[in-house]
Each structure stands twice: as C-alpha cells, then as structure tokens.
Amino acid sequence: MSLLETEVPDDVFADILGHVREFVRTRVVPREQEIAETDAIPDDIRAAVKEMGLFGYAVPQEWGGLGLNLMQDVELAMELGYTTLSLRSMFGTNNGIAGQVLVNFGTDEQKKRWLEGIASGDVVASFALTEPGAGSNPAGLRTKAVRDGDDWIITGEKRFITNAPIADLFVVFARTRPADENGTGIAVFLVPADADGVQVGNKDAKMGQAGAWTADVHFDQVRVPAAALVGGNEDVGYKAAMISLARGRVHIAALAVGQAQRALDESVAYAAAATQGGTPIGNFQLVQAMIADQQTGVMAGRALVRDAAKAWVEETDRRIAPSVTKLYCTEMVGKVADLAVQIHGGSGYMREVAVERIYRDVRLLRLYEGTSEIQRLIIGGGLVKQEQKAK
Image (cartoon, rainbow, N blue to C red):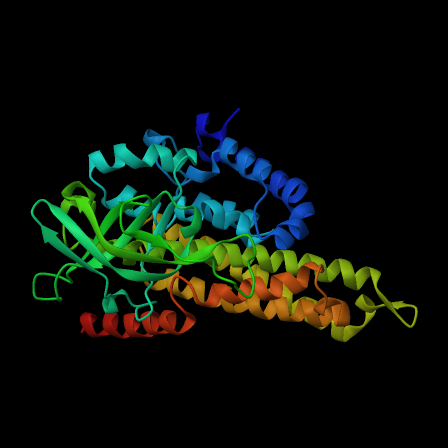
C-alpha cells in the first residue's frame, strides 16, 4: 500500500519510519557504489520512492501528501541521511524549499495546479534562488521580472540549482523593483521548465554527492501569466525564501546527523575488526577517543535537531534555532567524517570505501541553504537585536 493512503498520527508514524529505515538500509545502501559510478539514482529505486509517497511527505494530505510536520520530517531525514545524500536530494526540494513556498504562500489555484503532482512525484520542483552574485543572501538578487500587460517577463541567471536537469517546475525568485519602504521588491514565480526562453545548462561536475544533479538555469525573456506570481503579491518572495530556507536548515541538520551516524557505525565496525600487530585497533585508547568524539557529536546533534524541530512546530523559534542547528550539525558531521577517515587509515582514503564518499559528500552541507558564516550572522545578530528590543 502506498504511504500516501496512510494517516500519520504519532503512533502510526513509527511504522512509516521503520519502513523507510528498512528501505534505506536494505535496498539503497547496498547500491551506493552503483549510484556513485553512474552518477544517477536507479529507476527502480526512484519508482519505489514514488510508490512510498516520499516525494510528498511534507505536502499536506489534502493535496495528496503525507502531511508530516517538521518534528516528523527530521526523524525521516535522519534515516534518509544514513545513505548517499543523492537519494534524499531526488525528492527533497519537492518537500522542502520549493514545495513549502507553494504550501505556505501559493494561492488556492496554484496549489490545485501543482501540489498533487509534486506530492506524487509526477512533477519535480526546483528552487531557483541562487545566482552568481547572490547566494546565501537573497537581497543581492539580480534576476528581473518586468510586467508586460497581464504577463511578466523574467530575465536572469540562476546557479547550482538542484534537480534543474530533470525539473518540471522552477520556483523562481526575481526582483520586480528596487527595495523601498513598501517592501523588498522580490517576487517568486512558478515557471514551467518547458516555457520558451528557459535554458538549463550542463550538469555540474561536483566534488561529491554523485547522483544529485545541479545545473545553471538561464531565463531569457521568459513570459509567464499573472497567475504564475506566487500569492499574487510582488513582495512575497523574500519572506517565502527566508521561511523556506529556515525550515530547510533544520532538515539539512537532520541529514547531517544521519550521515554522522553512518560514519560512526562504519568507524566502530572497522575498529572492531581491523588489526594492527594482531590487536584490533579498537582496543587502542587513541582510537577509542576518536570514536568517543564521534558519538558525542552525533548524540548532541540529534538532540539539537529534535529541539529545533519542536520549536518550529510550536512556533517558539523559527529563526535562531534553525541556524544554530544547521551550524552545529553540519560542522559536526565534517569532523565526524574526518575522524572516520582517520580511523580507517589508508583504507579510508580509497574510493569504494563508504567513509571516503561521506567525507566528500558532507562538505556541501556547510554551504547550501546558508553557509556557516551566514548562520553565525543570523544567530549573533538575532540575539543582539532581541536584547536591544527588550530594553
């Protein structure tokens, strides 16, 4: 039975989580090398993911999704993060930064037009925000949208857009005017990938995350109707980007915890079996110390993710906690992965060894959806502003 047909209160969610855990560990983990070598998710795995309803796990049930809240989302993400990150990337934008723009800001007509397809996996949505000169801070956006009668004409370039080569829909952020006292002038549009003037560049060659495709996207005088303007409001874009990114940061942190748990498990298994001078290296105290640091990071990260997700759902903190969580967990997984390579010794530097791939894959987590530096600015600046407002 498709998970799409299942209600998901807390007592049932555990069954869904177990189903996903089994799928990840028995069907995806054994094929990680195949995914790395072919730079693609196999068709049968994609079909299984679609059947399970994972393309729409965070889409409300009224639109065909599971309707998981963020507390449930992060539990799922920690399981999905246990394997190659390209698996989650395949349907991550549908549930996350792209899909949430529609869920939170779309008109009823826009939701009806797109969300059911996004939830089923028939539509792959891409979040087109990043530009050559505007990454973690959308205020630097240069892509323009100019009104022409009842239509809008979009011109600009987007960079590093996840799933761009296979996207059916681009959620495009563009400036309609300079920022003024009325707002930021940043709007967001729903642009079909087959619209005239949309050009997707060559697939990027990346350090890691093989199977997760990104590319540049060019918009050359792309004409879209007024109905493509999300929320029917020119100033929705900046808020939509900030809210979607903040939610996504908690999700990315959960993925980092999943990858860190995998790196830890690989390290413990290797340390228990590999020998030096006839003695398992796990018996050596310095190796035990590295494993202890890994375990400490994983446990702290998991607790922080759950805390931040709870704060999001309860609406007690939707700004500082997501940044704290992403900052800590993505930095933590880098350290855990580095220790995993060290514990494996020379073997850890070899391709086809899981920790070597993890070491490369997790490096991206500190960059997208807001770099570590941006998170520090949000945290530090936010705390100071809170104190100033309190006085």
